[in-house]
Length: 357
Figure 1: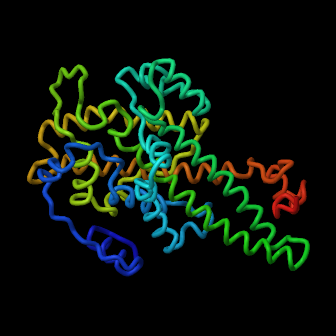
Figure 2: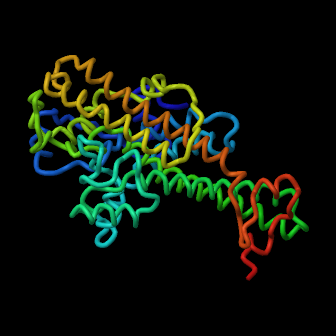
Figure 3: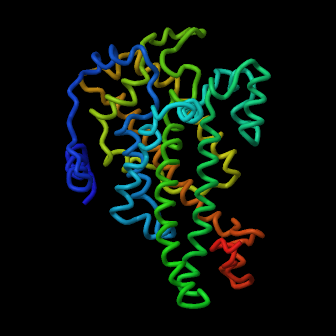
């Protein structure tokens, strides 16, 4: 049984997680007052959970079966919230990790007047150097693209070792070796769930327009020819509004079909974030027109559903792309390509896999 709407979602959590879902009754007006002094951190818990659930449900049969079980789908919905739940751990944890949730792209398509979103440096070190040349740094303007790329690359590596573990279970040299692979396969499945679930948070952040713009809360001190609202809209949009008005069933139904990733992960990420940034002004226009405070906020709800559906579809597509890329990844040292091991052209590098120095 999976969630079809808000009532079913609450029931699902009660049965599977032992947690009672308490409905908040605070109005959007009250939330505006409560959140006016701070910048919100991400899609709220409901939004990230929905993205994780919908992406997991939509994984095709070519992906590992353990990711498509009822338990794994529930896990991925909950783990999508984990990067927010770890906030407040202290320093340097927060200062190092919080900027990974956003990137403040200017109206000129540049970040702090430096790198263009469409031409980001290869590494975070180079990115930070380019920002410092403009008097800024990644701690101020964020490094969300690198969080997305880094997490995808980790998932590819996870899948590579998963493939070898699967082979070792049946092709290990002896019973002891096969037994070791059985245990390592179980461990790898747990690591994949954790790595995928945690990373999915940042893929979700990149579908939220206010996470990819200098106008991250209010419009701010920038030219405003359309007189967009000066209200702090970040928290009310991604938190309370999603929680009250959006269901996982309609987000799942709004997802685009599976799409293959043709270029590099960096190019894919830049395109994805660029498309999200194009929705900044439509969001401010809707808010300014009162769409989010209407008695029947259908237009605003449609916008929110569409953005969450884009995040879920992108997450699904990137997971599939990581799985498809994993045969070309390497394992062990010296590095051996997974496809060579799977084809029989190279033996399982058991010493490197087991760590027998």
